[in-house]
Image (cartoon, rainbow, N blue to C red; front, side, top):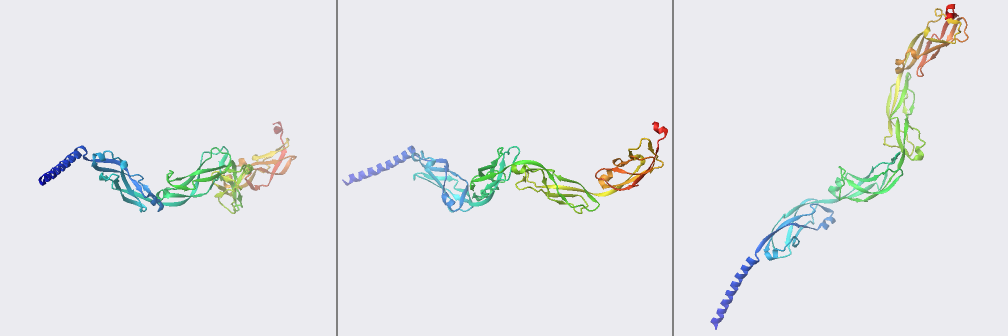
Length: 412
């Protein structure tokens, strides 16, 4: 009886042994252990909200993937996908700057073993959230209607806040409000969105503008081209004279309300003093603009030139043949041998005029109306250029002798 029981136990042990061998065979041949690689598994970035609360934001990379090598039985491993693998990077507690962060990988199935994965660490760049106040710049595009010009626009509010990562905020050079003039002939009142741009004029994305939209008013003004009138005060030094006053430019394009600009004929400069001056003046001088009027190009000053020259004298000599004797009795003639033969005229003017002056520019005449035969002292009349003065005439009274014409001269 005892021997029979021992035999049964032995048989059972042998059966279990062969069963294990058979299971091992089946598992290794039918459901063997294998490895599998899965790429582009997205890493979950954990605690991003905690970063934002602490005033830190993730700059880069925004997305991270890993490559994972798995091992396990074919039956469990064959259907494993990227969705069954958990990859995480905990970003909590990091400060501004670049930091190396560990990547943790696991699976939902404990029967699957993670043999390896890459990368195990990733360098993340963090930036501090900052805020900065910026002045809004108004930029006009397009053109006004013909005969009109856009005046100085008003932006409300004129300053705004920009907020975002320090790197981006610091790259913003201008906050711009763009308005299209669109051939306008009336004032423009509109609201436009703002653009934050860098030093290359490219918009900086990801920066928050507070507010995002501003109100803009642009006056559209009538344009008119008018001459410039320089104002000169005082008198140059004795012996000197103003010969010319010019403005460079001599015209200015102004703009303003139509009811004001229509009555403007010229624009004066502020006074330029020539008092006791002995040389030419060149001075940048502001224009005097009526209220509500402005210069289109913004340049409200001109160069006023006052040309001043020294006055000099010149003596010209004339003979009796140079004198135009008028109203002489037809029966009389001038006896040149008994009459004065010459006279001199001393004139004065500025150097440039005197240097160019000749006796042909001076016309001398004497009126002989009602004069009879004999000796006469006649007044000399001089016709000269307007800018030439007479200093001296010698002789002041010109003596002539009138005589009867001879028979030969009468015939002629």
